[in-house]
Image (cartoon, rainbow, N blue to C red):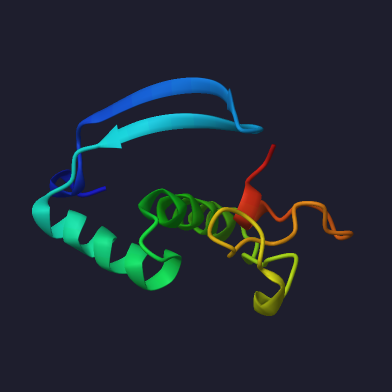
Length: 103
């Protein structure tokens, strides 16, 4: 990681919030990195920066362990979640790790 992309991190574990285990992490970014994050989040997750970061982390982990990132449902079937862009959490193929993480 380049030092100018963020060095100050605060982590807060919240236990279970609305059925999901949540951890709040505060990251210090340069102005340019924050602008990139805002741009990418707006383009890919309707401005939801947390969702964009979660997806980016899952994809990076899957690349690093040799698995291709794949959703359980096709894009047309991703209508669940707060923003209506997640796979069905009760899908017959199992819970989508990209959308819902490992719980």
